[in-house]
Image 1 (spheres, rainbow, N blue to C red):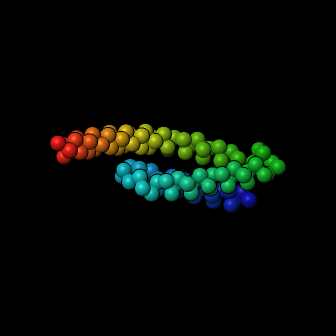
Image 2: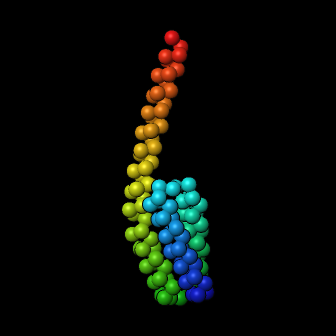
Image 3: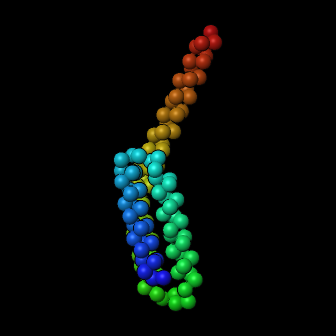
Length: 108
């Protein structure tokens, strides 16, 4: 089990690198799939660790370290994603305003 969990933690880190690359490129389309896959892996690892009787196992410590690392990796990307979201919302509002003006103009 520890080897399987360790391999899963490595996969979580690889997915995180892939997610970061997508966010840095402002290519958010694939992020949700990668994030969902990473979340499923983390939940699976958590379930496996909780099922172990030895709660002080090295894999638990590695899991905690990985979670802290994920938090550090995700924090700046989350900020970037939120900034992009705000820009998209502004653009949508501007388009809606323009559409309303065109409709009003055409109705004259």
